[in-house]
Length: 473
Ligand SMILES: Cc1ncc(COP(=O)(O)O)c(C=O)c1O
Image (tube, rainbow, N blue to C red; front, side, top):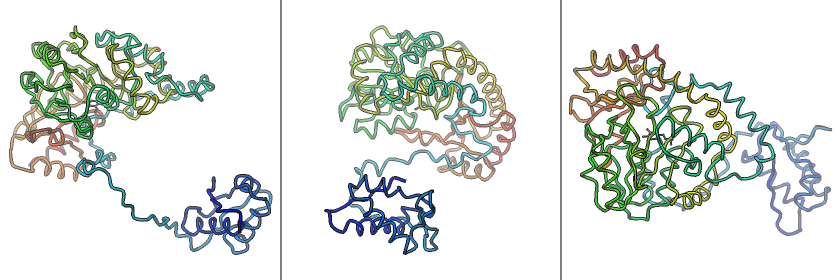
């Protein structure tokens, strides 16, 4: 235990040490059984004689606060009045900016133990190759021992940047060199850094309405002027983009949450709009590795001939969200500023994780894991699609979506509060569901649900839907 003692002047040093250790024991900062630093160490740290420190410990031992065990050390006694009471913290006058009071809390993951969990945004961790990952991570810690004492490159691990450039080049036809790739803490940080580099307070930012809530809130927290632009079956309604927007955030391959793909004519219109109004397009391609029907939709980035698109994506869906690894592919004109912004945010993402991920991708394991997970998720998606068509038609209007790890459906009724009531009844049946309401920007979206199939076990899908169905009555 590193014990902080501060001495005032050079008088009554023993008493000062005695009082501070005693106070730490009484207010629970030092707990029963905890070891105190040896008197030699404490004396050296405080620049006092060892006798001074000894005398303080002896007095505390004599009063029963400390117990010495010869050859082992000095410990806090097991005293009956230790209630583990919290140290008293003075009421602070410090208050966050009012904006933070209005900001919703991070999502409540307390339903995590729910057996029939249909919430979106999470992959199946049960199928992750943990043993292989552990071996790769240990190798990083062993082989890079000397390098790990040094800060890394803000743009990311050189090997991982090259692996990502190859991966997106092959799987998504995104033309990128390793130099164009910046490794980030998920899509969330990629968007944050792009916004810091591109926007000034008060600038207009356009997002799809409804939109992915964490990114919507990120922009709200930045003090920009957020405009929600409607989405229809062809994706973002490009003709309604504000002319003064400096940035548009969009998920064209699989709009979150509605699941539509942006049509080719809208893609071309969006690129032309960005060029005309001098805006940047942030393309979130978060889950298009999972495609179920039709031909893969090319990312906007692949159509961009004027360097307007910054492509962002993540390993949260294809591997695990807890790795916190995502990336952006940016044009060279932004590299230097992004590098500085990443350095100021957190210097760089964790090096051992980046090194292990590079090895994972290069060994072909990402491609293999994707092949396996496509089979797993397809089975769940097919079962859900059939059930929605057969058993929920009276209550739900499903939105057909060709990709990703979630599907969406509108509620047929417009009775206010019905979505929340269904979610509450489902929870009683051990079923977790997600409301579309959280995704609204400028408009309250029509009532509906976003159903994920990353978490629920395939064998539980039917029983989960049966229980969910009973919540609709
Ligand atoms: C639209 C969208 N973008 C990105 C992500 C992933 O974010 P991150 O990489 O920050 O985990 C998700 C996850 O749910 C998402 O739904």
